[in-house]
Length: 108
Ligand SMILES: Nc1nc2c(ncn2[C@@H]2O[C@H](COP(=O)(O)OP(=O)(O)OP(=O)(O)O)[C@@H](O)[C@H]2O)c(=O)[nH]1
Ligand SMILES: [Mg+2]
Image (tube, helix red, strand yellow):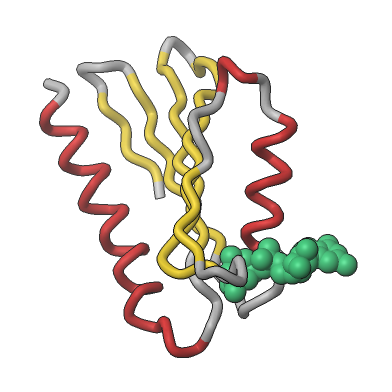
């Protein structure tokens, strides 16, 4: 999902990794974090169990340059794949949308 903030000249793009447990969602984000230059990435935030299973989400913000004068800001998330975290998966998907909208309206 992408939001364009014309006033701030920013494009916010949210990308969520959604899939079964242990399929490699978190590992994928960790790999991207190691490959992207320091000035183009923020901290990788992981909320996980003691056994490294995602408990709530992983989050990685990326700034990948400009497109026609608009700064691109990517927000990469993973959800927990374990079956019992169904509500958390929905919250990450919906919550992300609300966060993007709130930022969009407060930067004006
Ligand atoms: N062999 C192999 N192992 C992988 C690969 N990707 C991830 N793994 C391993 O699979 C296990 C689970 O990977 P995670 O990235 O934590 O999986 P996840 O999808 O985030 O799992 P949940 O957080 O429970 O949803 C870890 O031990 C990884 O090291 C891969 O491409 N090949
Ligand atoms: Mg995970």
